[in-house]
Length: 271
Ligand SMILES: O=C(O)c1cc(=O)[nH]c(=O)n1[C@@H]1O[C@H](COP(=O)(O)O)[C@@H](O)[C@H]1O
Image 1 (cartoon, rainbow, N blue to C red):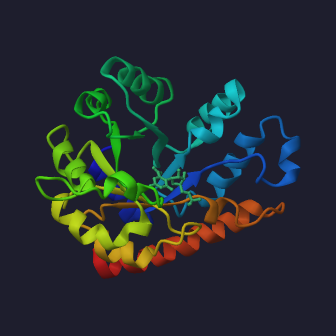
Image 2: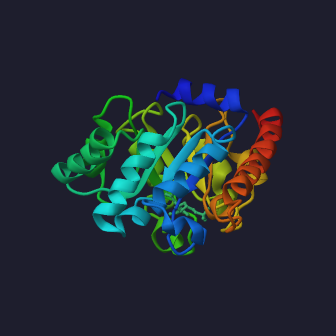
Image 3: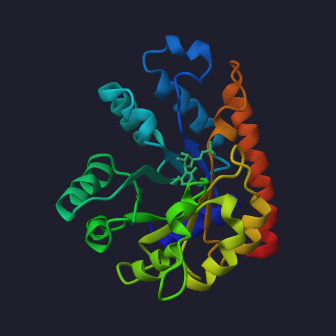
């Protein structure tokens, strides 16, 4: 999917919502455990209930690989089920020496046909570039993450000035354009967004951390939005586990719609 196509989806749905499919057998409604493939059955119903309000879906790969071969099958079925209009993110946080990164890229881009993958920048240019060699696919590089430990390294001051996450943002622009590279910025780090927009004014940002982690959608939208919206705001638990009864999907749809309605307002105000 191109940047323009993504922006078109955002405009059509008045939404920049990404639904996180962090699907956990211990948290899904008990009646689904009898299904042949509970992970897929849950995802299918969540996707059906939220597709009118969401422009992206982000299965977190850990939740599938935890179940071995069966989990990978559930993931494959899920990615095939997601309507083509939606942007898909393999939240895998990969990155390794070049030939290994190439294999990771083939796994998620060729074998599973995801639109994008999250990548850790720690091993540098030759670990990220293999992911950028695929046409029409995106790398989403971790910049400033939502967790408390993100500060351990990402906010370290560099001798030449600036902090490590700022160097990730500026250096990586030498590797790929804003048509193939996005960045992860946690919603809990919204105070940094004005500064981030000075370094990457045109890139899309994947922003997890609203809902369960307490980030503010309003602040993220106010300081993070650019002329192409430039935001995909993820919520996982706040949507998919809002209700553990047989009505879980209906409630997930309501939660997604609530976020979409807020987003519609912010698009009118800040775009
Ligand atoms: O790359 C991510 O998606 C990610 C980066 C980050 O800094 N923080 C973060 O929470 N995430 C992911 O975003 C999702 C957040 O889930 P909820 O807190 O339940 O909405 C999880 O799948 C996390 O792995």
